[in-house]
Image 1 (spheres, one colour):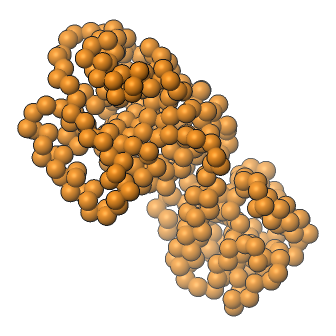
Image 2 (image 1 turned 30 degrees about the vertical axis):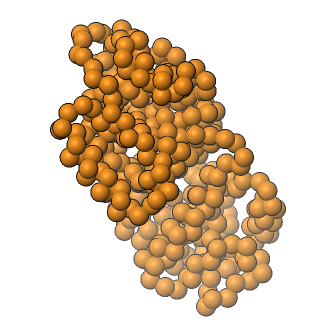
Image 3 (image 1 turned 120 degrees about the vertical axis):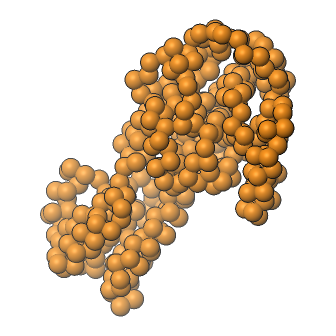
Length: 347
């Protein structure tokens, strides 16, 4: 996933350069640090790259342009959602001038590792506040099979189609090997990874980004699953959480249906965002041990609110039949799986 860019703005050029270099070198390629020792350099840098986080040294606050920007941001806090980067104040000896009191503060003269830890604390809290969606009712539904039932995705697709008769539903497959290209004889130009990258760069409208890769099949709106499933384990938990929240809040869909494969980073945090999670098994004793292990893992989370959202389903017995393309999906929709899903959805 893309790097988080941190701009160090301090008139002490040596300090700014050292901190910027340390951020880039010590962050395992997850961060990019840049440094600016004058307002002119900072403004020129904005023409080519937009930072996610800006660290402001004390003398940077004296620039009229910075003061004007701070005034605008303070007014936005009264009701408007903040759209720009997160600004933090690099405080010296614990002193915070009146012009910086509205900004989160990070002590300047401390080990760089502690500075970075404080930055991430503020960045995570800011990100969660930023993605809150006022008053609009959206629903996230999760589907997961501890025993990796082959019938999980047929159920998820038929359930998405059934729910789509009442609401606008977006189906998102998070499996590492979903098999869509082979099942449905489709070649996809973009997939889930492309949509995630574009949405998380904050450079495009989320709804437009989703629509650029959207496919529709038998009334099911879906983003093509990741072609390179190995990348799914390399995405950070915070990126997953932000992406799911963006889909729920800004994609234009009433329901986001998540079809899980592996326990991706931040798995339980994402489940907490769901209004309900269907835990699916299929007939046979082979499914019992994985289900029990999942229940034990979930109990260790000590999250009663989450456990109340879990709905355990035993999927109907299915028979393998050779079909290609959309005929395969039609077989699921109008067979026992479709009947099962429509009853569950109440249609």
